[in-house]
Image 1 (cartoon, protein in one colour):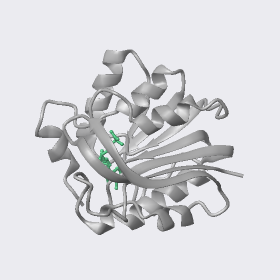
Image 2: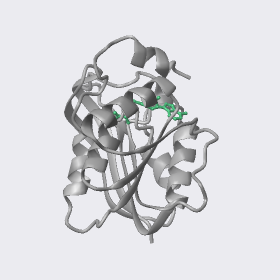
Image 3: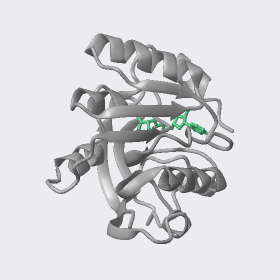
Length: 201
Ligand SMILES: C[S@@+](CC[C@H](N)C(=O)[O-])C[C@H]1O[C@@H](n2cnc3c(N)ncnc32)[C@H](O)[C@@H]1O
């Protein structure tokens, strides 16, 4: 497993920028979601969870890095928002069985495919009826033109594998292609990504 603590520690800049991910904003801009609570899977130093909380969403966020979680808490404080932040490994973590969510966001969860698939499965199980699952990440299928990405196949989102963790879900959109990212020091350039929005029955 990559040493995420080291990555978050080695710069005083926010690794993925101040602003929320564009796809998170796109999903939230839809008029049909009615999302009031969200689970942020691997929220890192907190840009997406904090932004959702600022929109009035009740946010629970989990990430393996205690350094990123600490940075995220500082960021929340600066913005005056409240996010329930948990440091845990998605290889083993499961949400409190009494807690359910209207949405789960899996934005650039860079880890082994089996862990990502498990994380999608537990998030799917924790969604309310008609809940939304949204994901974006560097993906398989790059035609060689993407500048960004982890450079190791197992760390890339595999659309088929991800979809297999959401068996009964209705696919609202599943998009693969190249986008330009401008998200902090780590995500600046072109990347081949998979974006998924799916809805629980
Ligand atoms: C590329 S960063 C993205 C962070 C955040 N989602 C964002 O877009 O700003 C990947 C994140 O996945 C987290 N991560 C990797 N493996 C994990 C695991 N097994 N359990 C929980 N978090 C993990 C890392 O700590 C890191 O914060």
